[in-house]
Amino acid sequence: PPTAHASCSTRKKKACHLPKLPASVPSSRTQMASTSPEPAATETGDSVKIRRLQIADRERGFLPLLSQLSSCPDLTESEFAACFADLAALGDDHVILVAEDPAAAPERRILSTGCLFVERKFLRGGGKVGHVEDVVVDAAARGRGLGLRVVRRLVEIAKGAGCYKVILDCTPELRAYYAKCGFVEKGVQMAVYF
Image (cartoon, rainbow, N blue to C red; front, side):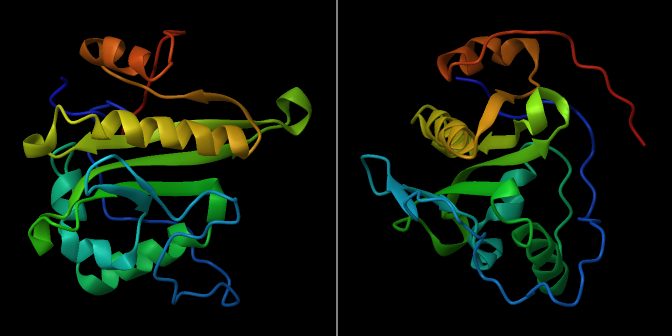
């Protein structure tokens, strides 16, 4: 199994810097919004549940898990809450899933995560493209199929949202892994980093 699942770019993550939202956007959300008919949590066959990110996941090991993928500063509680509120306000256009093991130690309950954001386009009659990003499985939980389950669920959500395709970037070593998730190689990634 791969050592880290990801959108696989090597960019350095910085604190969440999203545009300020209008005052009318509620900032007290505790879970990523869902207007889709998906279940709140999906059983994975063991005690692990796949569900949307909750604000309390900061204390359940979400940031240390992300740091296994790329640089992830330890945001203060208020910084995390502000970033969470900005992302939650995007609703179904920005979905972060986690795989949680409620039987694990409280600070290590989040075993895997992945993100889907939906890009709206003028192409294809105002079509939508799903982008899978920031997929990682805790080193101690690899080999259990958690990343595969998270990615497949993100693809299902994208399909349900009307996306005509779902794309991701990955390193050559992870091609076979993402092929198991139904992805095929297409094109070349290019990047400019700041």
